[in-house]
Image (cartoon, rainbow, N blue to C red; front, side, top):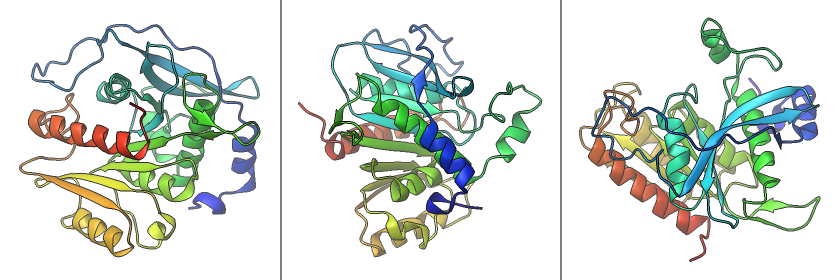
Length: 288
């Protein structure tokens, strides 16, 4: 499995050639409310934002999908990549992008588990699509999304072409997406802050190049991660002198921010999200 600089030249060429052009941002529309009526973190109906699916175009035919949310007000805003642990169609992922927009960011969730480019995704193929993507594939798909953000007038940038850099870019990841967020933070010069919710394994060798601030959220009753994995991660991050904020949520299970799941814990979800927004505003230099 290759990661970052070790990726093969074919995939590198794809990234270099990607135009990141948007096919369209759907008008903001109401998504049916979840059955969990205590979803205090649901903001998809907020009138101050616009959100919907986007597509990244390569060679005018190959498409990678994503979900984007941004403030309606004119201006340019810092970007935040959202990395799901599986599909981006589960409503809490679009809602995470929307919650970022409410807070004054542009949130983008790339579909890193798409089928081979140019073929449709079906319910029957979804499991194979999930299994067929390596870390390297996912990071390159995410990087195409980053390049798309770099070209949007509503995203804050600095410099002039061909040296345009995003002026403040964060990443928020969940489970496997939390591992990818940490990897992206160690590989990309664009990333300024990483937020990882109950992240997958991330080795000391992989964190050697990680220099940006990290925030970790973890439930004390997480039944999906090996016992002690996150505690070890936090200890190792601090041992590598990486600025780390870590928060534990008593009684919270895996996916406590996902209001679409029975593991949703409203109090922990809201508190963790408030901390996430404060962390991103600080490290992405949000202008008052």
